[in-house]
Amino acid sequence: MNSLRTASAAMRNSKRTRRRMFAIMAVALVLALLVTAGFAFLRLQGNISVSALRASDSEIPDSSEGLSVLVLGSDSRDFSSAGFGSDTGSRRSDSMLLVHVSPGNERIEAIQIPRDTVMQLPACADTGSGAYAGGYGMINSALNYGPACSVAAVEALTAVRLDHFIEVDFEGFISIIDALGGVKVCLAQPMSDPKANLDLPVGRQELDGTDALALARTRHAVGDGSDLARLGNQQKVMSAIVQRATSKEVLARPDRLYSFLDATTSSMTVDPQLSSLQDLASLAARIKEVPTDKIVFMTMPNQPAPSNANRVVPAPDATLIFERIKQGILVNPGSDSATGTSAAEQSANRKLPLSIVNGAHVSGLAGQFANDPTKQGYTVISIATAATSQAQSKLLIPDTNDARRTAAVFAKAMNLDIKASVAEVESIELILGQDYQDLERPEKKPIQMDSRSADQDLCG
Image (cartoon, rainbow, N blue to C red; front, side):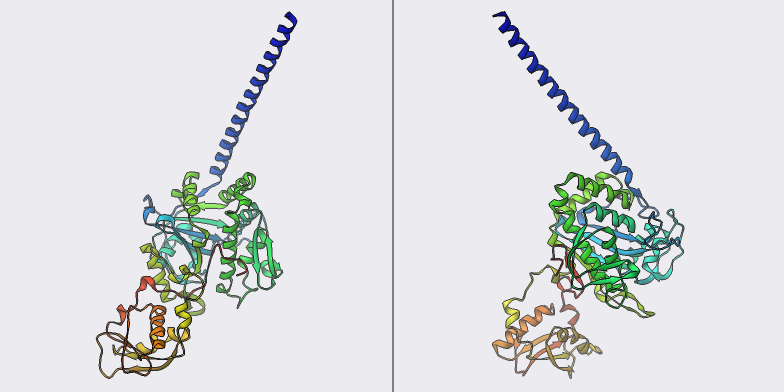
C-alpha cells in the first residue's frame, strides 16, 4: 500500500514538474516574442530617414478634409550597385505622384506629374541641400535642393497644399519589389531596351525588383521614346504593387510582411510629421480602407510647352483636376462610372445632324465648342453665328423620338445643364447664349486622360 502511495505521489510530482516546465516554456516564448517584436519595432523605426516638408512648417495637417501626399521616385545614383549609371551628383525626381486620399477614405486618386513639365520654379530656402533662387526649368530638377523644394514646386504648379512627402530611390524601389516576392505584370508585346537593361517577353509574367524598375523607367521600348510614353507602364507597375501588397501572399506571410516593411522603411525619406511608425501605420490604415477599384492612377492632362515641343505644361483640364482635389470631390467622374454603354447611349443616333450656333457673339466660340462633340462621334454639319445676340442658351430639336433620345445623351456627354425643346428645325441645334459659361457643370465634367484603377486586370 505504501509503495502504491509513493508511486502515486511521484506521478503527481512528475505532472506538476511537467506543468511548471510547460508554463516556463510558455512564458519564455511570450518573452521571446515580445523581445523580437520590440527589436523589430526599433529596427523599423531606425530605418526611416527624415527631411523637411518646408523650410519652416510646424503645422499638423487636417486630415478630415482629405490628405495630399507627394511621392517622389528619385534618380539619385549614390548606390552600392553600379547598374544605374554613374553618380553625377545630381538628384532629380524620375517620377512624381500627387496622391490624394479623399475625406472618409472613400477613394485614392494618384496624379502623375510628367518629369518633363516646365514651369517657373519657386525659390527654396536651404533645408540641407542648399538654397535655390528660383527660375524657369523642369520640375524634376527641384529635388536637387531637397524634397522641400519639390514640395514647393508642386504646390506652385497645382495650388494644392501638400500634407506629406515620401521619397524612394531606385535601389529602394528594387528592394521593396523583391521583399514582396516580385510583382505580376502583363505585356501586350515583347519589350527590349538595352539602355534600361530591359528584355521582357509578351504576356503574363512575374518580375523581380530590377526588371520592374526597368519596365517603369524605359523610354526607348515604348511609343516615341518620350517621358510621356512610359507613364502607362508606370501605372501598370504601380497597380501590380498594390495588388501584390494587399494579397494574402504578403499579408498572410509574417516573414514576407516584415521583409516588406523593413525594405519599405529602409528606402524612404519622409517629412517629420510622417516619421514615426505610428504615423506611417495611421496612413497605411487609411489606405487599407480604400477598395482597390477606388484607387486610380492618372496622368496630368498636358500639352507641348510653347517654348519647347519636347517639354510639357499643364493643359486646361489639369487646373480643373487640381481644383477638385482641393475641394475633396471626385477628380474624374468618368472614371467612377460603370464600364460599358448604357441602353440610352446605345439608342442615341450620333449620325443625326448637329448644328452649333454662336449666339453669344464671342469670337470662335461655336468652332471651339464643336471639338468635343466631333471627337465623340457626333455629326456636326454646321458652325454658325446668330444674326442677333442671344441671352440664353437653347437646345432645339425636331419633333422625333430619335432626336429626343440623341439630344438627351448629347447633353449628358457634354455635361450641359440644358433640356431640349421641340422647334421648327431640321437638325439638332445648340444655340450658345451669353450664359454659355454657366452651361457646363465643372464638378461633373469627365476628363479625357490616361488612367487605370489598381484592381484592373494587368492585361487590360
